[in-house]
Length: 126
Image (cartoon, rainbow, N blue to C red):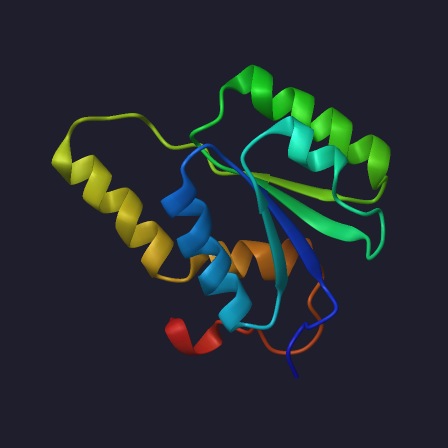
């Protein structure tokens, strides 16, 4: 059983990161919307309700705070997940961040935050 009714909103400034994360989560049955500005957030219909907002590391702390406040006012029960990565130039650190994304941790965090009942949709990745 896939969580086809669960809607996730992803907000960030890097189109390619948003698209790759969107495709990953859609593969597991989530409905994923992406935005690159707060103005786009206002254009999202209030139904179906957004269960989770994922804030990309490409946003500033101020942008994340404003987005959380805005999303919470529109969808009071929304869960929040901030992907905060260092902006390191160290190739080993960058490679470590890529491995974290590839090993299913994003899927595991999303499943936990939206209360996906049943087996984890990413259990086969571990």
